[in-house]
Amino acid sequence: MINIPITKILFLDIETVGRCPDYDSCEKFSPEIAEQFDKYFDWFQKRFPEDAAVDIDPKNFMFKRRAALVPEFAKIVCVSMAFVMENGEVKRQTFSGDDEKELLNQVRNLLDRCHKLDFYLCGHNLKNFDIPMLAKRMIINGILPSKLLPSYDTKPWEVKAIDTKEIWQYGAYTSIGSLDLVCSTMGIETPKDGEVTGDKVHHAYWIEQKLPQISEYCEKDVDVLVQFIKKLKELK
Image (cartoon, rainbow, N blue to C red):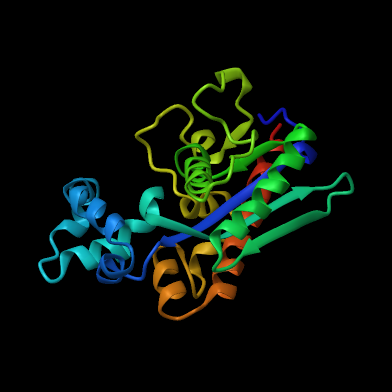
């Protein structure tokens, strides 16, 4: 089912937060970004209707809940990557920190090395989230994105990206397919039951200063990706 050698796959996960703690602080310290958030607030409400019904301080609520999902309003605080060696050992490299530009430069350098070694990227919702988030945040920080990240002119047969969400949906793009669901279904210990999970990362970073715990959560997601691909490659 997965014909690419597992030793040629770079497993990847990222953790993002809003670029400011809340809308008010964004308005104070990054007024031009706050102005854009104002312009796109209707889009956020339509995209996330479950959050649109909040009447008390709706912009702060939406910013804290959803800014991390949109590259223009987000900040990457952790990137974890792993690969499997010929002897089966899993090697992991995690980059995390408050300086996003420094973090992304380190990530780009590793991605460039893997590109030269003909690696494929692997992640969950990789094509719709991780890749565009990484590429856009690199550009915003004045960094040329790695060639391993598919761009607008990358031909379909040149894309070296394995999206486990696409694999799980099996062509039914309206079907459910969260990483938590995949883990539960496949008998893999879910990373979503820890102290820090996806919807808590923004609060954990800005309010609780729990970057080490965020990094641990990110690493668990990568470990799960390795286990999932191994299970697929064992199918007979």
